[in-house]
Length: 130
Image (cartoon, rainbow, N blue to C red; front, side):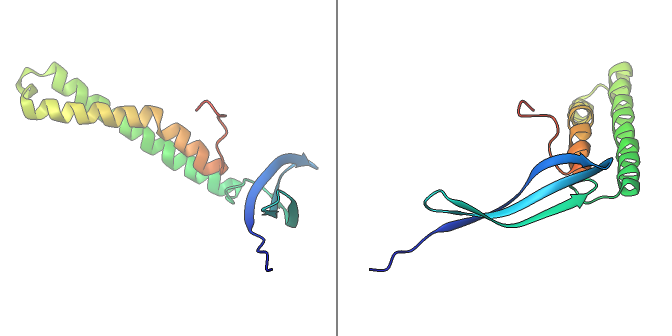
C-alpha cells in the first residue's frame, strides 16, 4: 500500500532583532508535513528593512509620497472651499466634484500615511487592530 505524505512549504519572516546596532531580519523557510511536524529547510539573515530598500531609497520614497500627500490634501481642500464659498459654483455638477474631492481628501488623510509606512517598512507595524 502506497501512502502519500502531503507537505506545505512556508516562507515568512520570523523575527526582528538588533545585532551590533544593525537591523537584522531572520527569515525561516520550512516544510510542514501533514502530520504536523515541521522541518527547517533554510534560515537566512538580512540587514536593513524587510522591504529591501536602502536608507537612501526610503528617504526618497518618503519625501516623494509626503509631497504627493500634501498636494492631494491642499488641492482637494481648495476645490471644496471654492465650491462652498462661491455661489456661482454651487450647481449639481460641482456638488458631484465636491463629493469626489471629499473622497479624495479622505484617502489622502487616512490611507496614504499608513500605506507609505507599510510599503517602506515591508510589513504592517500598526498591530492587529488596524
